Image 1 (cartoon, rainbow, N blue to C red):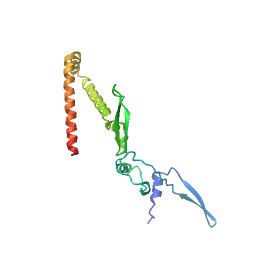
Image 2 (cartoon, one colour):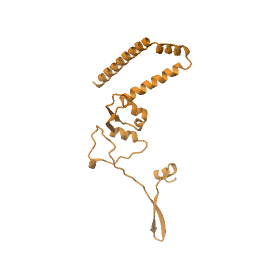
Image 3 (cartoon, helix red, strand yellow):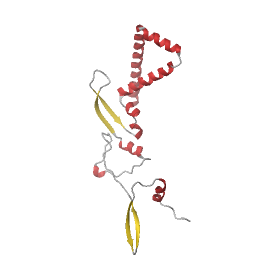
Image 4 (cartoon, one colour):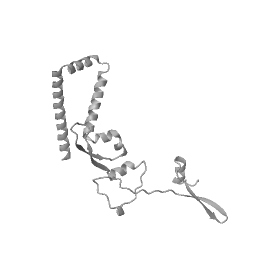
Length: 184
């Protein structure tokens, strides 16, 4: 029966190491080439402004991170970034708070970041609604004529804006009430 192959040998076939350190050893009259393992330890505070209490530096343990457990390690650390940014979305200016929380690498995608910033999330929702409307208008002449008529008539436009504004306020109120009841 063949000797069981070490994990290191199998990894070299599947994913060869990028760094190979070797040295020559004299054993009697023969010279043998030995390979040193390449191990890297990185220290850093990756939690940012996490609300999870982090242990003191001397009490921290090394964590083995690879592509398979990266998200699990991030969930444990719960990295967070909280800061103020200039409000360039409205003419009033000022600043608004940004509180970003990351639980996986997917949370760094632009769409996920935008979902965590309320003013940007509302803009993205409006953009997707406009894209849906554009797609519905494509090839639908009757709907396009109706929309053109409403846009031409300022009274109907104001009534529509009032209805959608009231509906939007009611929807936001329901959303806030449901989130308050979930918190309890």
